[in-house]
Image (cartoon, rainbow, N blue to C red):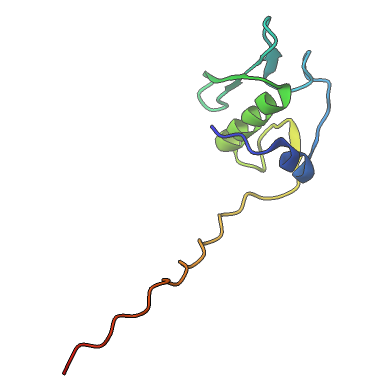
Length: 109
């Protein structure tokens, strides 16, 4: 999973309560070697899903949030951050640039 730039995330959302475990984030724990691990429980099947290990607790909490939104939708998901936007579809791609070659000459008559 690609993690978006954390500065961009910080501009779009603000952190919720910091009283969630030792790291302050829901679903995130610190490993003995200093990295952060995260996992989530599927609310429908009650099975745990391993999301991976991350260098920072913010990256791990963002991975948790994206999985929670995937399972429950943005309106019902329990997340570490309050998202002040709705996930919108990507805009259509821009039209291709014009060809730098001149048009072909007309066929001889």
